[in-house]
Length: 205
Image (cartoon, rainbow, N blue to C red; front, side):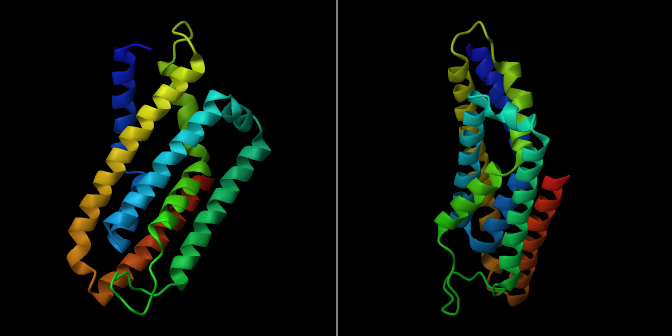
C-alpha cells in the first residue's frame, strides 16, 4: 500500500467523519449534557467500534452478514431497541447534569465508552460503509489483504477519535456555563432522548 493511497483514504474517511451524522450527534449530546470527559469517553467507544468492523471485514464476516437478510435485519432491530432503551433510561433520570450535585450520581465515563462501542458495533450502516469504501483502496497485488484492511482501519480509528474529541471539547466548552440552569438541564435531557430515538429510527431505515 503506497503513501498516495493512505493519504487519499485518510481524507475520504475524514470528510465522512466530520460531516454531521449519528456518531457526531451522540458525542455532541453527551458532551453538552455531561461534560468533556464523557464526550471523550463516547469518542473512545465509537472509534473502537471501527476496529471491530475492520476485523469483520478483514475476515470476510461482514460480507456473510450482509448476504443473510434475517441476520442483518436482526442486528438492525437489536441496535434500534438498544438505543430506545438508552432513551428510556434518560427519560427516567433526573433532569440535572451538574457534576457537583449531591442528589444524583453521574455515570462513570467508562459506561459511555461501552455505550459508544455497542452503538457502533450494532450499527449495520457502518458495516455497509466499510464494505463500500475499503475495497476502493485495497490492491490485491500489493501484498497481504488483511494487513491492508487493518492499516485502513487504524487510519480510520485515529482520524475518527481525533475528530470526535475535538467535537467533545468544543461542545463542552460552549455549554459549561449553562449547566447551572434548571431549564437548560431539562433541555439537555430531552436533547439526549431525541438523539437516541432519532438514531434508532435511522438505524431501522
